[in-house]
Amino acid sequence: MSDSKKTAHEVMAEIRQRYADNYWKAHHEHELNKRSSKLRDMGRKGGSVSKRKLWAQQVAEFLADEFSGYSFKEIWAAIPESSAPLCIEGDEYDLGVYRDGQKLIATNYETTAELGDLGYDTFEKKYFRPARNTGT
Image (spheres, one colour):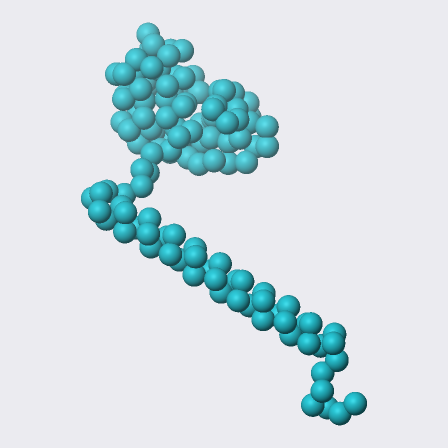
């Protein structure tokens, strides 16, 4: 067999490689198109994707409901430190919430994976006050 002829195995490997290259190229282009389409739609609507944190909204609603007669400072002081997080039922999973100084930190209660954190003022102004005012 001469060097110019390829075996069936080599031909199939080349076909698989070309297919894989084309697949990933098409997939990448599709993802870019989706992303630019989303950005284009946001531009048309004159806004952006909401930056509100769902977990923070759920925590604020819970605290506003459970501790309606207390001030925010009293509620903040009652949120436990990291050793024993407060468990709050969430829409998709239970949240573990605790304080670390002037930060409120949320985790997935079962896996302890951190979901995010918010400062004292941000949580009070953007999440807790609106939750208390709507009476949810």
